[in-house]
Image 1 (cartoon, rainbow, N blue to C red):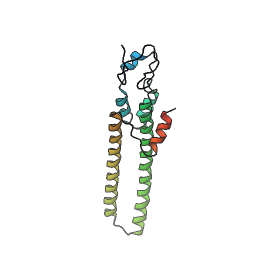
Image 2: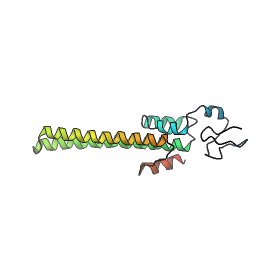
Image 3: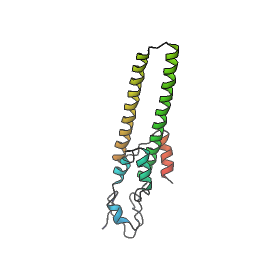
Image 4: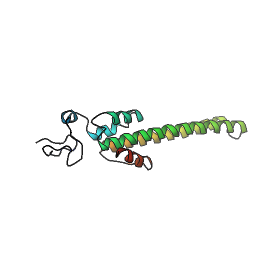
Length: 158
C-alpha cells in the first residue's frame, strides 16, 4: 500500500488528496516522492529572504502545500519588513548625526560608538529572529509573527 510522502500515512486507493494531511496527490505522485519534505522546504523559504520565498511559491510540488506556502509568504513579508526597518534606521542615523554635529551637543566619537553598538544589537536581533523562524519551520511548527503571520496565513489559504 502506498504512503503519503509528507506525513507517511497510508493512502486510500484512487484518492486525489491525502486523508491525513490534505496534500494533493495528482498524477505527479512519483515526482513528489523525491521532493523535499515540507518542513525542510518551509525552513529553506527563509534562507534568502524574499528570493527563496518567491521560488518556493513558484515550484510545483510546494506551491500547493499550505505549510510551505505559509512560510514562504511569511519569509517574504519578514524580509521586506527587515529591509524597510534598515532603511528607516539609516535615515534616522543620518539625520541624528547631522543634528548632533551641527548643534555640537554630542562628541562625534561618542555618537559613532553609540550608533555602532545600536546597529550591532539590532543586527544580532534580526539574525536571531530569522534563525528562530527557520528552526520553527524545520520542526513542523507554524509560528505566526504578530502582524505578518496573519497576512501570510490569509495569502497561503488562497
